[in-house]
Length: 502
Image (tube, rainbow, N blue to C red):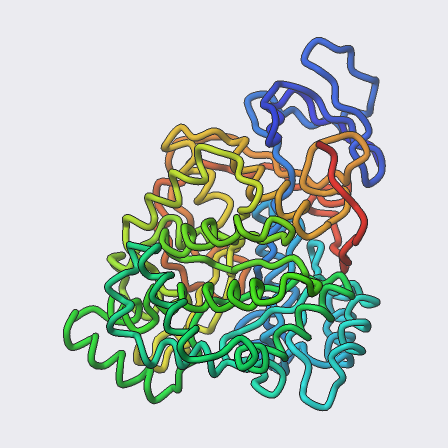
């Protein structure tokens, strides 16, 4: 099948120009400049893109597709329908399903279901294995299956990795250290002094032995390690803290952000870097800090990664931590409950300024699409699960923000398409270039309108994003060279040795 996408604004991270794209089969065959003569092709295969924008299909490396025992929240089919309808052509699914993706048989079952029901390309992460499985063999199996990496949640598998040093740093210093989150030099000195007084080098090495083994085995199998940065605290402690802060602030979202405060995120980041610095001779995989929520956390990662130039360390930014704050007004505050929590408007503005003025190689967008049923999100705030869906609004909402603020769309394609493909080795996707897969989103800027939740494809209609002031109308989405109505997704595996053009 051939298509000719005529005379649209072709946007890549490196240029914006009027041109025409010829698609042959699943790939981009040629890109014609504005003045080049176009080939003869059937009228039904020509798409007039004049006045429209053509961008690489969005790659979203952070999506909770649920399914299995959670079909009331989302299914692979409904989640990928929401994705492809909004120009998100490839996603990587998170492993905290029910049952979790922490054994090879469950991972194979999930992969089969992806192949049968997905409407866009889907890859997966795994969780740490159950205690009965050998870590080395587990990682080798994950590599064979094409799994992208292992996601580490706070408190995961204490039989494999020891969380006690992190919890102890927090418990002994939470009041004092909280004063220094904006003075990171002093904060780092205080944390380091505390750890040095608590453990000798030999003692600390014993405490983190499991972590070092994890880093080495994932590196040997070319897996990525992803971290949700937080301190694993007991649920009863969390409940007491929330009720205390809610009584003080009279706002559930502010109390939630104070309960899971910025210091906990910073201490987790420090702890991981402390392990990495403790023995720079051991192998280390690429590392991502997911959904980084505050300017202080970004600044700390940027500061500490300079001492480890040999390790690939990346930062994932979500749309909600870029545009939504804890002051957002919602009919139910529980609809805005997410982990990490929504932060301050100053954090939003910092992230916006950072990402919308530069192409920074260590950052990318991930939606953290995390659907729950309306019934679940209508519960008391404490009982409400964290997370909300975003695939039905992600592209239209952010692109409208770009138009509203007159930001350069090249930055959007860099963080939403090119960089995810480069970081996670998703072969020949994320860029408009001859020989790459024809994964494309075509849209135009239109007068302001409002999105209708009834049109959402996701199982969950919960949405804390403002649905008005939308200025983007998607006309076509191509996946593997096929238009939306005829497209079918597939399972995608990590391409270990592939490097992108440019």
